[in-house]
Length: 117
Length: 116
Image (cartoon, rainbow over all chains, first blue to last red; front, side):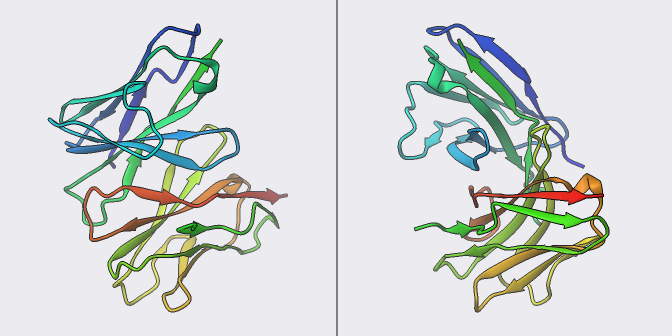
């Protein structure tokens, strides 16, 4: 089956620093990837849609200058949390849709738990 | 307005019993897809089952089945013969529009606990 990886799985950083999270589709090419954020005991909230070779589409209320998304290849999208603050601490999950499958369910990465101190 | 509603924050079920997790949705788009995902404590999202709006039959995947009632806009997940490993968060999600790289909207989730 399709596999999506995320790196790192956990990261702790100091307030004011930037953190980059990678999302890779391992056995299929994903022209579109999605970035979600999940607070403890809450649902997944879509942050942005990452399109290969073009600018990401951000959901309302998500600061594009704070959450930089780059989708440079068909298998890699990155999310950079710039000038992180404690309120950015959360679980970040990426997903990718396999255009080669009929159902096209989204395959999710294992997630990255970010803690900003 | 909520597009996906899961009204059961928590469910407790005895092992080997069947369990139904509720999900209702709201859309005016005639083409849509409904998904159920399982999220164990590790955080990974595991795809369980899919139902397309034009599918005539209810979807089934092993012990999982989807009770799709289009007129009522409900897409309940039924887990038969529950197992201890089924304990997890369960999310219902909807994709609006035809298949493609559309985003998913998730419900609030239901925490299922299977008791031995």
